[in-house]
Image (cartoon, rainbow, N blue to C red; front, side, top):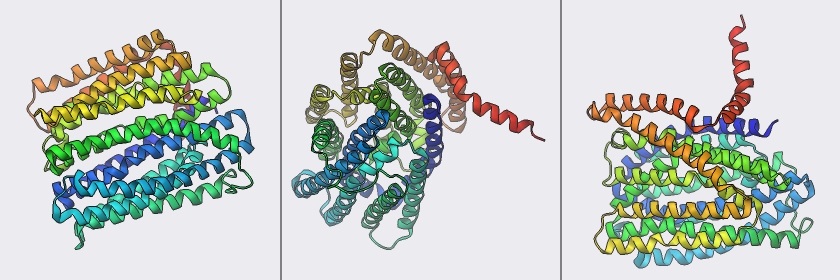
Length: 514
């Protein structure tokens, strides 16, 4: 199958997955907030955030393992893939041990002076922390399997597992609303159990379907490969660790100055951001193996083409959802949650703006990683990632409002983007003029036009259903027209028609059947 068609097919599968899971997840969050209450929901967000931040670690390590596997697939080396899998397992066993040790030490300090948690809920918070530590260690051990699934571009199983996860989370949310146990402890235990169950599914599936999932550390031990993977993963980890500290640090600083009630607003913002950005993340998940395999096969031209198109499509995918969401955020949160935490609206809007800036550049980071020379980039990137935390702390000490931290991170996103561009030019031979004119300018102008048109109903209608529907309709119509004719070039539109031709042909043929 042609590479572009394969990416389009995988993105389509993940799009269907997104449609199903987003609505289930948002409804489950509404039930969970109602069952736990604002304070306990914020408490779970700040305690669970200490563990959830390790999702960045897992993503980074999975990307590192997947990069080596896809690279070997691009070079056609089957034996090396088995060695990569075994060395990846060994690396993650060692990592899981150190993470377990680190979390237990960190937990002592979290619950003895750092976190602002009411005394009567301290025991519950400690219990939830231990539940989540166990699931985190097991999830680290599953990273090589996640990498195998992604390297094989098996997005159907990935999507199926995500749908199952969403349905089980909904079941948990319904259960705790009716449970007579402590809702917070019950929720933490069931969420940890769910992660363990999903890991078991993943392990069984990979060993059943993929021959390279043969665990024999002695037979496939490769010291040189282990050294290469350790070095690459170490530099990837440096970037992920700084991101983890930065993201979780936001919650801690907000907790210190404003308490768990404002942490609830932050949790809502993260939920909205995660759900609305999932399509773009899925598209990148489908695109990354192509970037890595192109680099492995020595086809730098295809790698750059895929990267530039990925940057543009990544932005346009989130833009379609972000524009009506930013404009109608008060209506959306009121409809979704009923009791909206303070600061939730402005937190959500500012976080989405930051995400829009960052989505331009995610594929470029994948290209830098595919080339493999990441030491210098990760060092510089990691340093600037930590700057917003002390700046935000001093702003809060000076009496600035809670949302100031999001403004600081928007400025950081712009600075980080400039650094990504410079390293893409240096290591990937990216043409800055081509990127700025064909990607940044087209996307920026498209966003401003669609946003301006979508905002018009605010001048003619009052808050409510009619204004929301009118905004949504205008946003969809203007988006389709402007993105198609301004966002994409004529050559890109022709490529889309070529990719969609088999689908439209099949659909037309079915319509003609008697």
